[in-house]
Amino acid sequence: MDAQTIIARRIALELRDGMLVNLGIGIPTQVANYVPRDIHVFFQSENGLIGTGAVPDEGMHHRLLTDAGGRPVTALPGACTFDSAMSFGLIRGGHLDMTVLGGLQVDQSGHLANWMIPGKMVPGMGGAMDLASGAKRVVIAMQHTAKGNSKLVKKCTLPLTSARPIDLLVTELAVIAFPGGRATLQETAPGVSIQQVLDATEAELEVPAQVPAMAL
Amino acid sequence: MRTLALNAAVSLIPDGASLMIGGFMGVGTPERVVDELVRQGKRDLTVIANDTALPGTGIGKLISAGLVRKVIASHIGLNPETQKKMIAGEIQVELVPQGTLIERIRAGGFGLGGILTATGVGTVVEEGKQKVAVAGKDYLVEPALRADFALVNAFLADYLGNLTYALTGRNFNPVIAMAAETVIVEADNIVPVGLISPDHVVTPAPLVDYLIAQG
View 1 (cartoon, rainbow over the protein chains, first blue to last red):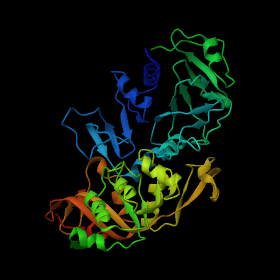
View 2 (view 1 turned 30 degrees about the vertical axis):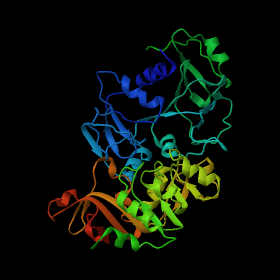
View 3 (view 1 turned 45 degrees about the vertical axis):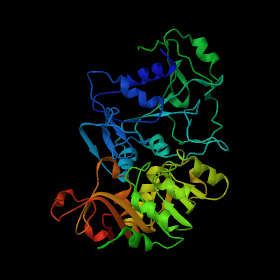
View 4 (view 1 turned 180 degrees about the vertical axis):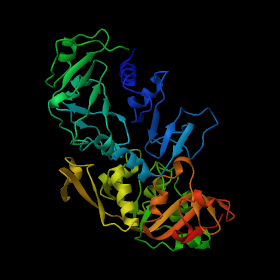
């Protein structure tokens, strides 16, 4: 299993029947491929759709039906559409059960930076700040390191997306939660030792006595 | 509501005007209006919209043609030309979280002075803004936004100007239709009165100033 698949499959295990969930661009989008068969999850696209379905077959797209990245999607039976004020009312108003976002950095107190690299990349925050501040549960899908450097850091050096800490970080090496504002190892990926996680991590990581492997 | 030809409707827009434009990555953007703005060579426009789409698509065409002085948007990341012109100082860009942007526009159209939102608290977004605590929680004061013109793309318009939208083409359109001095609508389909049932009208006809005739 490659890194992205491990992350997406593990996050899919966080889904529960009836949840309203928003998936960000990149690895988060792949979570939709691993929804457990016995549950129904409502996926929101913040451009105004609940019930986002798969990419349409060749020639079956509609120019007015896309995901938040502007790519053609389908709408599942029971889907609904709405304007952007409603869409972000759902996000900020406590109606969105979970958001899965990508990350540039997460720090040991759970703060997220994922929207800009000063001087290099200034795309705009889009919906990321509303999602990170407003969703009931914020889950980050992020590779553990970039170019050999830990992305789980002591303190974010990039501009924060929200002052509110995230709830769960899933990487290809580990699952990390932030109880009491301290990064705490919850699970390791199959075949990955605690030491390997620590070696790849700049942040101070609490390690409980029992750390199970991801049940993928 | 008056029906106008495309060129006549766009002629109403002076250089230097502020425009709210519907659309999300070009989906639900009035493309004929955009093309006519380019053809008429408007100058110094302020564009308020979710994003600047891609080069060659929707609002991206206005950017490429050099018609825009200022952009207020949530995302410009998929249009490298906007980023290039921003870095070169040719376009002023104000980046606003998407939920804050649409809610500032909604406030502008609903007679409110602004909104309180927790989005952006503790980030660079709060710089220079008033912060207030309500029931122990911090919020940013975000002022209402209005514009000279709203350029709306509807899926159906009836002869009176009642509008509905389709699928994800709705996005900013019904909200900007409340928040501008003059509302110009490009509809994909113009249909007889009664075809849109009262329960399905999203934007009521009295909000629409000009409906662009089919070409």
